[in-house]
Image (cartoon, rainbow, N blue to C red; front, side, top):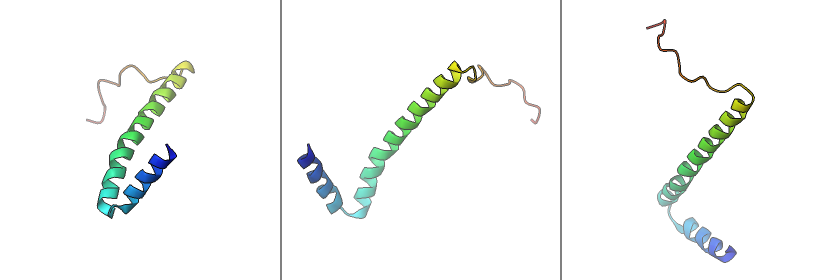
Length: 65
């Protein structure tokens, strides 16, 4: 596994800047979105257990419209 990772790292470092950025963004944007979604669900669960969950629906009328 370590030798595979070293080979991948050398391959990625050998690319020019634009392909490096494209590959990093293609991996990091979905990964960070997934982590943010998991944290959101976990915190919603914790707040729900503490009785501080989200309301079911927002107000149907607004005063400032």
